[in-house]
Image (cartoon, rainbow, N blue to C red; front, side, top):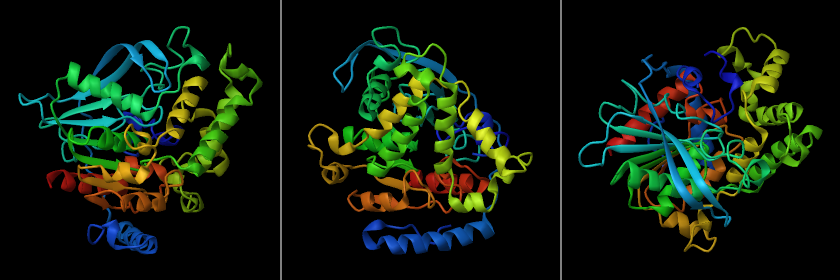
Length: 399
């Protein structure tokens, strides 16, 4: 599992995530309390540790990269981008009916390879049968971002784009360029899960299934505080110069990286030194910390990092037009069946937040991932996580 620890959740490229990164019954949140969720997860953790098998090794399926440009794209902030570019990838081919497509929206600073733990022979998604689309978020440095947009929107002047802005742009991509009439599913991890929930609220009849792993329908106060701590870590570097830096604020990015690292995995993951499973050469905690500090997101731009954190912070499906900030009403409007898979040990999106939201969602199956790998468990961080996700997502899509 080479060098996966160099990547934060959401930047898991193909070479890292391909190898790295039963509950007894399907769990329904309407019938149980939070305490029972946690008991159930503990039972599943014991079961998984004893019985999980590594997923079969398969060749990485080929992906084709594309770009879609929208002219005069108006963001929710009121700013209009003369050109808004969405980079995306496709696996397989759209059928004549235009209804065999599945959307896989990207997570924090990720590229179009971020879901290859779920794609291929023997896995949940098969590009020989399905048309798979992986879209890249605004701000990742490839789609329109602070780092690649000319003035008057360069750098810190790039508008804060919301999850809804991203969903709107990709909806235009799917309907206007790819001519997708209906999605079999939207499947998302982390910020991809945020997008999946927004798709379910904004376009409730456009898909047949929703899968959300390690992500919620709203960013709550504690998540905003965490994101602000990471933004502050970058901004306090004197080289940052309020976003108009001449060279990347390297020390600020290192500080950002180490703050993020503290939340990435569970406390027990650190106590058991499970980093040794992904990189045997990292024999000491000091070496692990050093690698996270200096190689967390290779080549990232500081303004891009901050933009996507702001996007993350603003996420709230209750703010969708027509719901007047009412989260419960927005969740109640969802029509597609949802497989909601929080990580049992996620410190970014705690399982209790998922339990709270799931009680308001019709046709929702809440299925915690029994893992010590924290947030990245939702992207197949360990072989057991990958097996668990592929098995249950495949079963859900058959329903």
